[in-house]
Length: 223
Image (cartoon, rainbow, N blue to C red; front, top):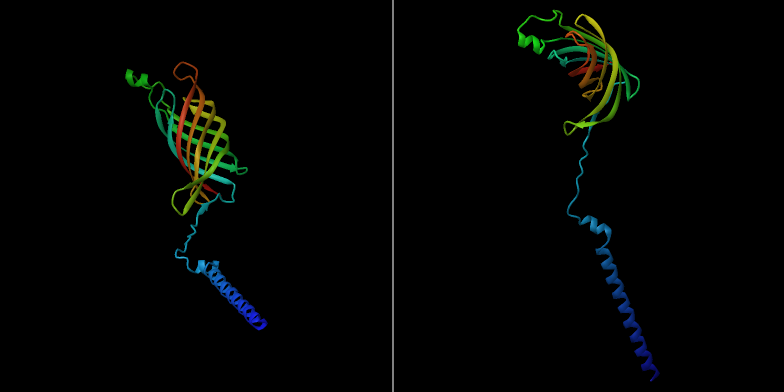
């Protein structure tokens, strides 16, 4: 009887041991199938990231800027006429600069001269002016003109004073305005400016302050 009992007990132990071994093998196989290495090796889509290179045009290390410009000057009561000039600027820092300007234009006929058919009120119609102004960059930024090139830009305001020779007299002039600049390279820039020149006019018999609006396009170089 005792021998039979031991035989049954040994059979039960062997059965339990076999069950444990089978269960352990199944768990190991399942872990191997879901391992991160297998998941990575079986990944079907491989992402391809292409880095885009952007080239920026920066202001040259030099502080001086010379500009040649042309555009239109509207002289109050004397029409809109071409203007041509040059500017020289010194950049104190990234935001502030001092600028000197010299330009020439020519006044047209007044409406009274055109309608009346009479001669000119005065012969010398040439206009020349110079001024010294202080400019301030208020909104520096970037302009993406192509997929691979970006250009530095800036909106600026400017104001100053000088003198305008018109109608045979030198007239104290105040100028106020602003503009937009695009740096195409580290030494070359494009400007679009709008400025108003205020000075007294008395050539028509009435002394008044005239608003003379000017719109110009310029190309500048840093040196």
